[in-house]
Image (cartoon, rainbow, N blue to C red; front, side):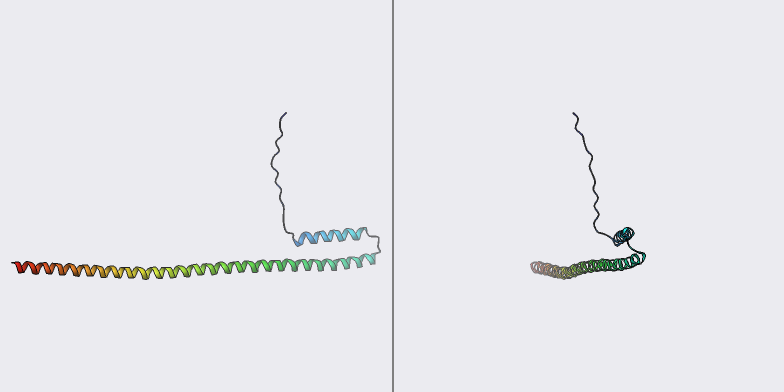
Length: 139
């Protein structure tokens, strides 16, 4: 018998919900309930008005929740950006300090090299003069 090979399945899950689907579902549910309820026209109008008020309040609450969530996310993002900016500033300042220290150290080494060079030149001149004086004394 031949084994059957099944292909891979891809499952897409969506997270989060929007206000739009919520409102559409609420309207459809309210409309269906009103159409199938055995009431008079006045009672039906009153019921529609009450449900519309509740729906408006629920939608307003949902909008407030989404707003608060968005504000929290924005605050969190701002805090993250501030931390990164502070970190970069610290790194730049450390780099500046290191560059200044390296420059000062290099200048010190250069000055010591110049001093050693001058001392060597002076010593060589003295040696040449000393040899020249000894050569004149022998002659």
